Image 1 (cartoon, helix red, strand yellow):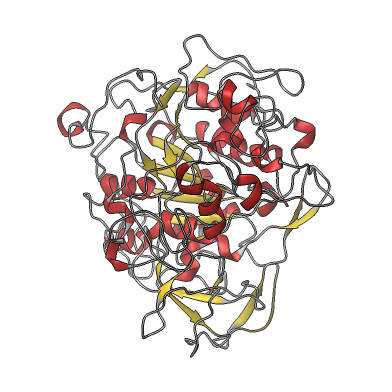
Image 2: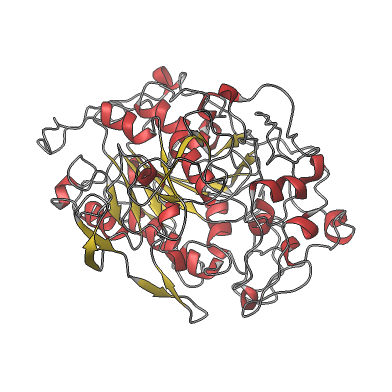
Length: 542
C-alpha cells in the first residue's frame, strides 16, 4: 500500500554530531554520589534527550485505536476535529470497513463500550489469524466473547476513534506517531516486555518454588529447551525473582543480559516504575528466608470493578536475577531512585513522581500503570488508560526536565485485536508453536541465534513520541518494533552498543525520523485526564 510523502527531513543520530550538538546536548551531568559504592552517574548523550520515559501499555493493535485516524464520528464522547494538513495513515479504508475479508466487518466502538472482553493473544493464535499475510482469520482464531463486559460477535474486528481515545489522538496531532511499528514477535505480554528490555525471549529456565531449575521444564514456560533446560518463552509465566508472583503459575528465570545491566555498567540512572509494586504488607517467609512481600493494592475502574494493581508478569526485570528486587524493597531515599541500592532499580509508580518532584528524574524510566489503568481489555479500558497517560505527560510537561525529555508511548502486544497490516517476517521460526504459513512454519530463513519460537515481527501496534523535539502532527512510516526503543537507549547513552546473542536490537529500525532535533517546540499540550480534551490553550513553557 502506498503512503503519502511524510513532511520534514530525516537526520541520523550520527549526523547530529555536527548539526545538533550543543553545550547542553553533550554536557556531563553529575548526580549525588555514593549509593552502594556507586560513583556519580553521568549522562553523555548522542542527542539532546537527557530523559527518556517509556509508557508501556497493554494489548492494543494499531487499527484498534487509530484505524480511522484522523476522522472521528463525533456522534458521542468528546468531539475531535483534525488540524488542516494532518497526514494520512495506513488505516481502515472504505473497502476494509464495508467488505472486509474477515468473517465480520470492523465496527466502531463508542465510549459506552469501552469495557470489553479480552481477546486471544497467544503466540500461535495470532499467527493463525494473520493467515500467511491474508489477515483474514481473526474472528476464528483470536476473537472471543464473554459475559459481564461489552461483547458481540466479531468484536475482535472493532475499533475506537478520537471520541474515546481522545488524548492519544490529540497527542498524535501535536507530536509524532508511527503507522508502521510492530510487536517484535507474536504473542502475549511477557514476550513483549522481555523484548522491550533485552531484545530477547530466549534464555528462559523453568524454576520451582525454591527457585531452582526444575528437572522437566514446564512446557507453558519453556519451549524448545536445549539439554540444560534453557529455551524460549512464548507465554506468560510469572518471574522467578518476585515475592508477588502467583505461586499457582509456572515460574521462569531469564539468563543473559538486559538493558539495565548495560546502563549500570555505564553508570546511567534508570528504573522500572510499576503501579502496585510497593508492598501493602509482609507475611510469611520468602524462598530465601526473608520476609515475603504482599502486593495487595487495588484500584477501581470506570466500570466499578476492583482490580489488583500489580501484575508480576508485566515486570520484565524481575525475570533477571541481576536486576530484580524480589522483596519489593523501597529505595533507601528519594535521591537514590535510579541508582543501585536495595531497590535495585525496581520501583512503585509513586517513586517516579517522587524522583520527578525531587528534581532528579532518572535518565531512562519505564512506566507501567496499575492494572486498572494499563488498557488491557478484560480488566481495564481506554478511558482508565487515558487517565494514567495524561497525568504522567501533564506532570512531565510542567517539570524542569521537560526541555530535555522524550516520552515514548508503546504497547506490549495487540491482544489479538484486528489489524490489517502484515509485518515483514524478519526472523523466522520452525517450531511446533509456529503456524503462520503452515504448522511448524513462520517465515523463511535461519532464526537469529538459532533460537526458535521468536517469529516476528508480530502485530502492528501504536507508537507515539511526545517531546519538545517531536515532529509536529507527523506520521512516520519507518519500519520499527519494540526493540527500536531499546536501540534508542543504546544509541543515545551507550554509544550504539547492542545486547547481542541473536537479539532483535541488531535489526531494529530507528526512531530518529520522529524527531526534529534542530527545531524544538517548547510548548505544552495539557489535556484533561478524564475527557482527553485540551485542558486550556497551549501555553509557552517557561
